Image (cartoon, rainbow, N blue to C red; front, side, top):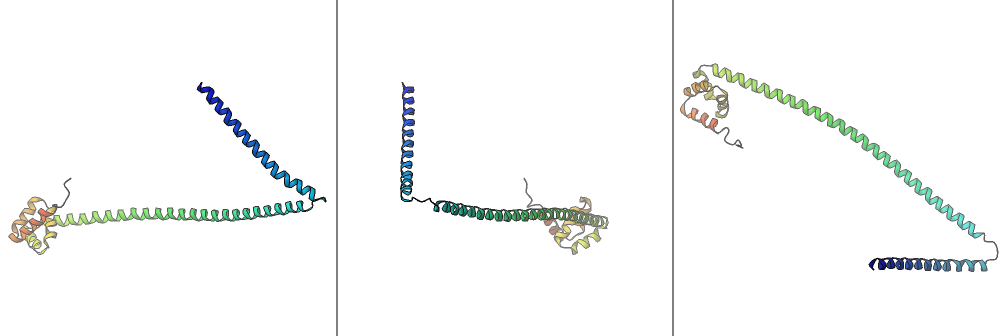
Length: 190
């Protein structure tokens, strides 16, 4: 029973839409035919103004289309110029990026070389201090700032560092010990 109702509703909706379209067509025909019949009865001579109007409208439409085409062509030229500018900028950016990466690589190599040279120099100086007589090395360490001297003591073999520390005055040895003990106090444990 419900299928029949649905079918009936569909038919009735379609019929209503068809009637509305037919009414619309009749209204349009009546509104457009009446002025045409009136023009035909009033003007008995051949109508020469209508072709001129059509030519004017066609010319106006043609000139509007040509103006629009010219605008679009100009816009296309602008877009092509902008695209070319962007392409050149991208190429320059790529070259600059490549140069920057090269410079960064060279800088990293220079820094690594400087670091290794500095470490080599410190290791060599530490070896010199280790091979000195403890009393002479202690005299030198007494003249150094505590952080600087403690750095060398921390790099030395424990036996050589101990011999030098025994030759230092107790106050100086204590200050070196405090610096050595606190060197890694702030280092993260995790």
